[in-house]
Amino acid sequence: MIEEQNPWKKRFERERNARKESEALLEEKSIELWQINQDLEKEVEKRTKDLESALIEANKAHKAKSDFLANMSHEIRTPLNAIIGFAQYLSKSEKLDTKDSKYASIIETSAVSLLSIINDILDFSKIENGNFEIFKNKCETYKLCKNVVELFSQKMGEKYIDFNFNFDENIPKSIVTDEVRLKQVISNLLSNAIKFTQEEGSITFNVKLIEKNDNLALLLFEIIDNGLGIPKEKIEAILTPFIQLENVTNKQHVGTGLGLSICNNILKLLDSKIEIESEENKGSKFSFYLECNISSELEEELDEYVEEENYNINVLLAEDNSANQELMKLVFEELKLNLTIATNGFDVIEKYIHNPNLYDIILMDINMPEINGIEAYKEIRAFEKKKSLNSTPIVALTANAIKGDKERFIDLGMNDYLSKPIKLPELKTLLSKYSKK
Image (cartoon, rainbow, N blue to C red):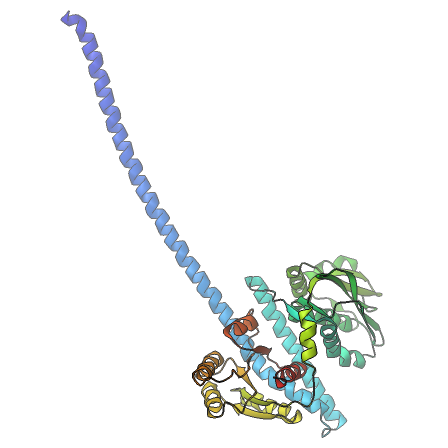
């Protein structure tokens, strides 16, 4: 009987030992897996920290680059503001003879060209960094187009170009779009047409209404020239950055090769694109469609602010750059307006607090030493609140030209915005607007 039980006992022992070995092996493997899991968690934690550190460094580098671009924009535009402004004044001065007036005009044209190149480089950098944005506002359609045309009238006159501007009278008076960027696109296309159209050639600028309902309008912009044209194999390539077309009349490449690429990026953000039709030695047509909201509000607003030369307004200007101070003195002297200049942030606060009822508007340079324009603005508003005074309109002036500047300053509570170099028509419109208040 005992002998019969031995095989079962041995079998039981074997199974028990096998189970113990399995449990021991399982425990050993569990410990190994736990250790591996711990190591993986540590590795994931380390990698996460590394990625977070890398992201922080990337953000720092991105901010440093943005700050650098903002600073470079300010540093370059500030002297250009004075160069362009004084050149414009001299070229129109009756005190200069024809020869000197021509030289002043050349200085102005060269400075404006330099500004255009700087703008292209800065815009391309914004596009590369994903910082290029569209800011839509209400604007007057015809006036927008007419202002661009007037910018190029002298250049076209110098080349004896036959220019035709056709604006559909059924187009809504006011639309909602990015006025600055739309002007940039039209300006670039007109500038290219002038560059590649020979003397006594022709350029036509058409603005057509394709369709309209109560809220939306579809517009077509066309710029047609009988210039040099573009070889078929190069039409697609010219929308690529850094591609320059050769002006066959002088065998030189013209421009940076960025303008059309930037324009196409602007139009993409406006849900459009540049369309090109061209035939070599016969001419080109550049066009784009623009769908935009119709604004009825602006038509009422525009009627309120009719531009006048007889302004009744006292201006306080905060400007630390001596050349720009002299330029603004000259401009306001020509406009027969009262101008008080503050040389820094502390000075503008002191002058305003000393006589707050004297000034109808404050033009506030944002980038000033010691105390900047934003801090000065806050101090003035705090003083007005403490003394229960009406808020004096404060307009931000900046040469930074960085995305969202206008919106940022308006959100802070500033009343308006002007970018440098300051354009006289924009300044006149602004002064006319606030002289009514």
